[in-house]
Image 1: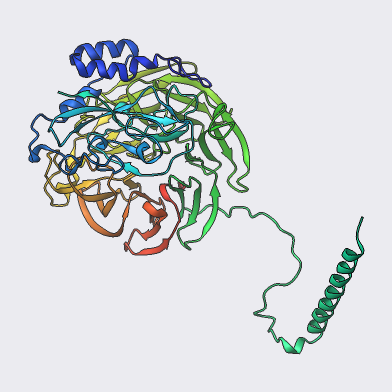
Image 2: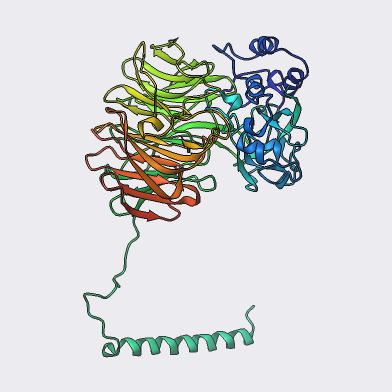
Length: 190
Length: 400
């Protein structure tokens, strides 16, 4: 149910305002300040948001030498998206939808994609560039249970939920039951 | 209509049965053929089925949650290695025990049609003897995340529960556990991971590097923040911090291994930070890639024995950003002297650790594959290896 959370006692909230469109817009041109301003107008008045996708981008330093890369980035591959070391999965936690009848950026049959996501910044080993990745859960079905991965590059704790990979990001779907996770490429991080 | 053939068949069956019964009777009539001393003979008297009660709670019990595929929480007796019962905890739930051991609480979310239908959030209340459901306290929501150590906590007097919600706006549901109803919902943007604060309300860690303190009033609450003391994105404080109710303190630990004590209160006192690696004579942890060192990590990787001030931390070798990696060693930290007094190698990777609070403590460990281990905290000897014992978060009963 895009655009509202529905559900018993849940707060109404502009889901799309937090969704992929916003990330894409940010990835394209927004400065950090303008992004935060827009987000701040949408989300609750948090005391500080130094922590949104931006800091992921800054955390993935522009120095892409092996000495500057995380262990995951040094060993990531670009050929097989059903393996946990596929480059986009640097901060994913859950079953890979590509092992569950879906794809890297698409849900398996009958599952509903969440309009919101947590985010990561992963380095593509083919071009050495950093990209923003939106980890969107597919929801409304029992857990897929295949290809469980838990990668933690720049993953933070629950008080920074947008960078935490434990949260079930099924807000705004008909059912919050978790099925699997996708890794949607949003754009270049720098 | 029953055919003659069928009747003949029944007759044959009846005949055969009669012969069998006769043979059985003949066998029973010859007790000398099957001598069985009464002392070793299995009971043969007719029985009535019944349901056990839980025995008196032991401080050596460990409530160990199953893994992702099996969310029930098994209660293990650390002395015997035997299971004494199970708490029904579904995948989307958090378990909390009343500090006085009067109730077992499960904060949980279900749907009326299993994976669809109407969502229902509640605290299910169980009695500690029969484990019967006493009541359900409806909640206006709660975060669905599996389970986390500090998402559902109870005040020291057992009267108030605090349930973390994220919808995705962050708030805390304050529950009156005596009246068994929700008191109020406190908006708490940018903060999570809760701890009760006696006489005040509760505190939570925040994304701006502060600790928030919420003074809970009868109808409304006020929120205040400390000065920032950690960098959430660069070297965050683990949300599985330990709480010592006797001192009103928490011990926090960062990804790189910085320990710190925070005295809770209306205005928390933030202690200075010190390196767990340095306390062991090892180079302090760093955020740089390719810097192989010992780092803390796991799902619930710290536990404090209050009376002795010993902190037990799961540590592993690796690079930074391995904060969920299972522990390869337990580092025992004397919080008073700020020294690592023992490093205990683990034979299998362990993600969760919890120490009992009695005078002869046991350490419960759980890891992938459902392994539960019980370790003597004095000798570090493994007392029990329990296969399929759990694998998830561990809770132990409080002691007076």
